[in-house]
Length: 132
Image (cartoon, rainbow, N blue to C red; front, side, top):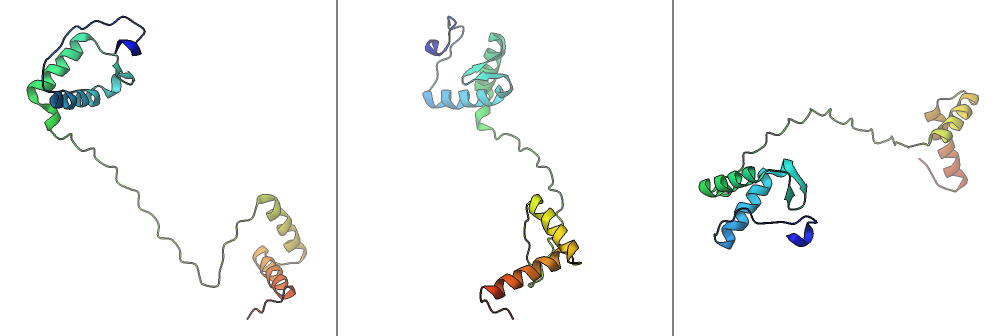
């Protein structure tokens, strides 16, 4: 631990126990002190707080108890998606192109949708596609 801390460290409290229990107790303590974590293994708590938490954890074997489940927020109701008719398509048009199409459709006295359909049909016919 000293190699990862620039300040001199000294052991203020120690408890002997089996390695597997120590790992579980440490993991539980880390979860309990999560809000006071500063970086990795380091927490901003007093020695007394640390000793009390470790003692309480070991005495009550708190790592064996399941944590309380967080209540999930209810999901907002979604509106059902509208089904598209089979003869429709959606086309995303960049704003600058949309402005040009709007001007051309206005000049032709058509809605933009009708104008786009006419352009697509004319282009398909020019390329030899048969549209029924």
